[in-house]
Image (cartoon, rainbow, N blue to C red; front, side):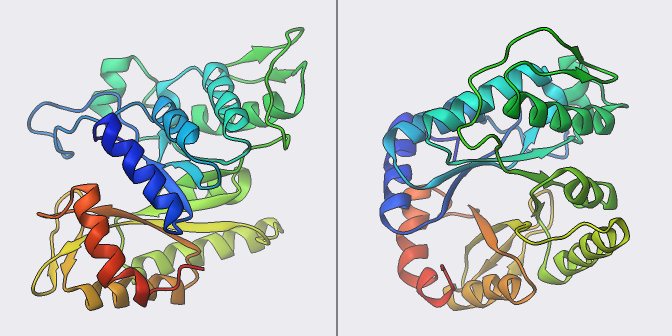
Length: 287
């Protein structure tokens, strides 16, 4: 959600809560190449005000980003926006966060592409300090902070951070700094490899994975026969029951939550949900 009109976003947010979905997700790109890029020339609403709008219309459904590109923004400012959104939504926020990959976007924003991993790691550590301490002290490569007051802070003293990415580096960041991992555009067997990496990294570091969330983003749409789209989204088009079986394969390997992104002729949210709720959802576990 995040590319529609205000009316569509409101309608879908309320419907998702009323029909038992767990989370509303939004994406993040400030700019994309107009032509010739890996990613289509899409327009996406800014994720934080979009989620704030959804928060005002709902009461219980969780709100999440898939994913915030951390180096695009000042880490303190972003930590403040996230803490504010978490307070306004009564603790419903999940921060999906990653270091990014679109070099042209980094260049246009003057963001640190070569140091994007280091910036992201430091920003997450900084957020933890900001969110738990009214007078934070922090000394890093990109931020030096002392003698200043920060607020508001999350009511729970923290906000769950699920690390996005499919590389070993992203999986290591998830174990070391995150509360979960958020994959994207992979088949179940590819996700299973990443889950193996996560377990290996945790075992080597002696870190427990109790309470560690595993989530994954899939691109699916309806078709008369099974079709793999290829390209940027790596999507699956198939009949409804085959889509349900495909989604169930992720649960079988240990994925806790699936984020569904519609593709194809029925990708409009209202139209897609009409069919997904009637023909797919009842065949998958939505505990």
